[in-house]
Image (tube, rainbow, N blue to C red; front, side):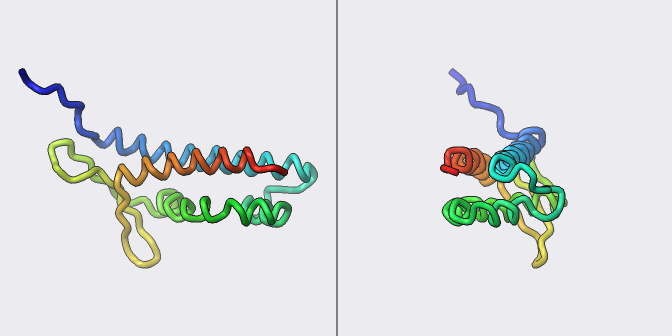
Length: 133
């Protein structure tokens, strides 16, 4: 009897993984924005980085959670500002991946890395949400 294997990921699957990372990043930023607005409703968030605002008003919480978030910033920035290529051939043994331009050259990010980053962003959002004011 023939094995029923799941189809290998294709370009649509890879693009969905990129979208998951970017959506989870947006949700994380919204969680941080909500914290800021709850603490300082009059603060103008249109100027400067939301992270700088958060660090200024909740330095203890930011310090406690930043190491989990900072490691994710790099991949998000690569995707948002340097995405320049992708490979996802279901007939190939190579894992689907995207390519991003960086200041030092090009960086490859595999689909499994993207999935791990999306999961980590979800956990980071929960940590921000659950942190005591």
